Length: 139
Image (cartoon, rainbow, N blue to C red; front, side, top):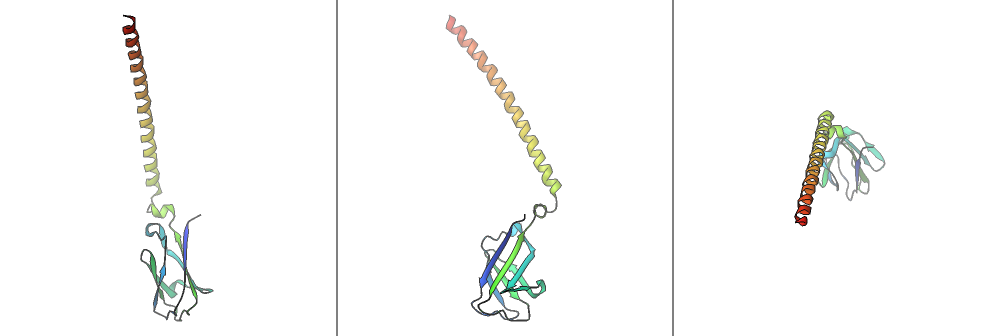
């Protein structure tokens, strides 16, 4: 299930047609947001895509009323937007991401093999050192 964000703002003043209002957007993540998925409701009315414009500006979004009607003071504005899917974040190149994961796994396996080899060498050196120490103790 894709992550999504939603924010709301109770209008303290009416928003005329062609006017803007700033909606706080805490948690907004520009890199992971599918701005084409924005949905808007004012009060209990869902607003068609062509009847508003929105520009995200970090911690706030500038919402422009293009509805031809005033949004009344006291109404609550609801903004909803979905996160991008993993394929979108990868710019549509899941194969490249999988190749990178596979390369990292291969590197991990190679390092594990090197570690095992080093552990074997350390054990052999410890055995030699123990033998040398034992012979010195016999003298």
